[in-house]
Length: 223
Image (cartoon, rainbow, N blue to C red; front, side, top):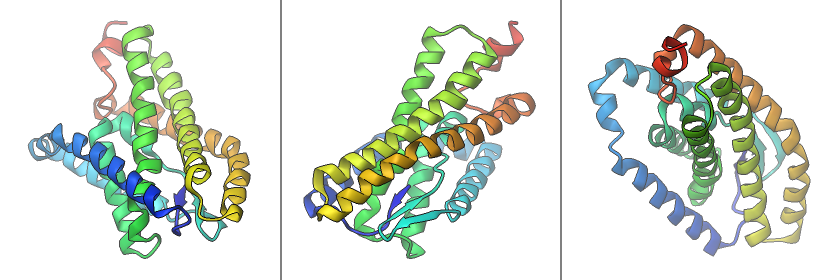
C-alpha cells in the first residue's frame, strides 16, 4: 500500500519524514553495509531481492487516485536480512518509486514509515518473541514468523496508513476513502501471509543459511 498524492496536512508530512529519517538513521548506525561488503553472496542476494520487490510493487491495484494497494514483502525482507537491511531495501524502493514518478517526493517519509518502519518493527517484535520465548521448533518459527507475523505486519501497516489519514487528512472525502480502504485489510493480510510463508518454507528447506533470523543449528541440527 502506497500513498501516491499529498492528501495529508503538511505538518504531518514533515513529522513522518522526520520519524522515518531517524529510524533509517538508526538502521544505518548498525553499519549493515559492512556485512554486504564482506559477504559478496549476501550482497548479490540483497540486491536481487530489492530489485525483485521493486518490480513486484508494480503489480498494484489503484483503489483511488491517491492510494495504491500492493504486497509489501517487508516482513519477508526482515526475516531474510534482518531489520536494518530490510529498511534500506524499502527506502531504496520508495526512492525508486519517486524517480519513476509513481509518488511525489513529499510523500517519501510517509511511505517509508507505512511500508517499511511499521511492518519491520512489528515483524522484529514477533521474531524476538519466537526467538526468546517459544520452543526451538521449525514449524513454530515458520508459522508464527512466516505466516502470522507477516499478516500482523500487514495489518499494522494498513492501520498506520488509516491512522495517518484520520490524524491529518486534508479533506473529509480522503478520510472517508481511507476508512473504506480499511475494509480491504482482511483481504491483503492472507495474501501477504501466504506468499511470505511459502517463500520462507522454500528457503528454510533448501537454503536455511540465507535466512538471517533463522538459526539452523537450534532448529534443525539439535533435533
